[in-house]
Image (cartoon, rainbow, N blue to C red; front, side, top):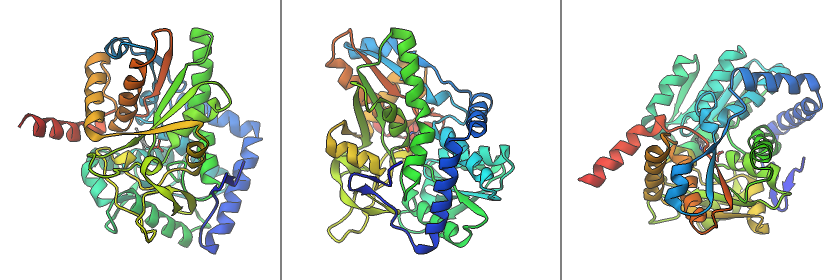
Length: 389
Ligand SMILES: *Cc1c(COP(=O)(O)O)cnc(C)c1O
């Protein structure tokens, strides 16, 4: 498990956190070799989570694109409605193994907060979630879900009142309560070992994709596409495919299209954010820039360090998709396939349709549908109403 991905990664944290990160890394490493832990992880992901998630042939969308076959990896069917469950479960079981008595988490779209609240309830670990007040407003149903699941939601009013600020507050809490508390970081970001550990828990997506595509078609897909916020569903999809010939495409949020949106890999520069060296959106002085995206889950100025390395090496290609394009893809998936996708993977669907249109009908494209769109209905309806006015 590398501490670094090329020049990227590392653990740029206050000294008080160093022992906690060491303890976490040791617990995680020993859990990987422990067949009892592995069996428990598999049991919970099946019985509570609903794994494995299917690979779905989006035939109508394929017809619309007029090229390669388009398939969805249905993480939207996972318990809680997003891939976040995979990571929250893994870290929750790890926290229990370490004897921690309390879980904390940050959340942007609210999906990670909901996933952590579910796991906290199931494993009897009291859970507190930090969330920016701007996100609390635009993702109100998830705030209610977390509270119903027994979690405490702490509103964060600093900075832009979104994900970055919520992570700052959660890190502050962790530094203060590090002995009793595990911080369930929600994406493949932050200091080592989080990026590698989160990738490990999310790699179930890519491993299932690999075996399902071999069973269905006797071969791997030609292209795999996933949206990139912090990068956890994308790295979970890509990592098991890195040493195969499958082409990989990561899709960032372009926002309204007037600035960089939240596209740290496409528009950012290397720098340090939340304890790791990676691509970030920053000004000339290294101050983190405010991001904007229609999808709260992609609205983050940084990205996991492994993606930074994969960008530089060219193994994964990263592109940016704007709000209006994601909305268009949302409607395509709704009308063509009878699925309301989350706005985050709608970005990936747009890029996948564009890519499929340029490929021959014999090729196959798999898009990771990282979550379902129920949480986004209000945002979508508001934009549609503004359009028709
Ligand atoms: C949180 C979220 C994302 C973005 O997070 P990653 O760590 O980049 O995967 C994407 N899709 C959905 C549905 C989410 O909830």
